[in-house]
Image 1 (cartoon, rainbow, N blue to C red):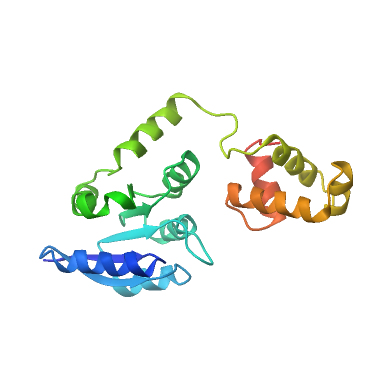
Image 2: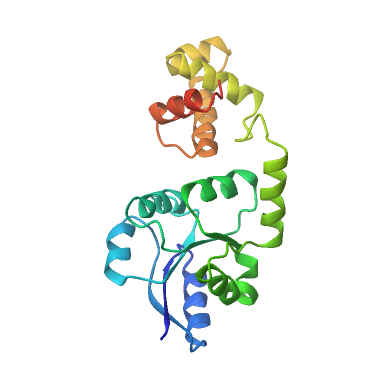
Length: 208
């Protein structure tokens, strides 16, 4: 019986390459491939895959957010993250969200099927550099897990105090556009989309 794969990947060329790669194997079948995860819940229910291959950085919604949603209704479905990222933040966020494995895109052609087999056997496949990073992160907890710059931490603190962009700009002698630019970067690093989410995360995780 073929193993059904559901792919979420916004890069058209890579999505097509994955489809071609899967077509070459008699053990695996591509159930479907989508360029975003805006309807991930419905698509998982529709296709009932054995394994999900999930890109992290997609338009409209990240793969990490999609994994969190999938875990609200299915805790067992294996989800392997496919990504170009090999930094601590994306790795640990994906694992916390419930990812089953983590494979760098540069290793897809040589290690994808082994990773799928491993995850179906209960393992947690990871590229070697990712595994080393996870171990290192566990051994050396960082005080600044989101790699915020000193300026970004100051602005996040001001934001958490309820200050407006105008007040923050005056406080740091910056233009409002500069403050907006800093806050956009803060949102990206914290993986949030609003001031409320940023402040909540900053307080809950004691970033300020």
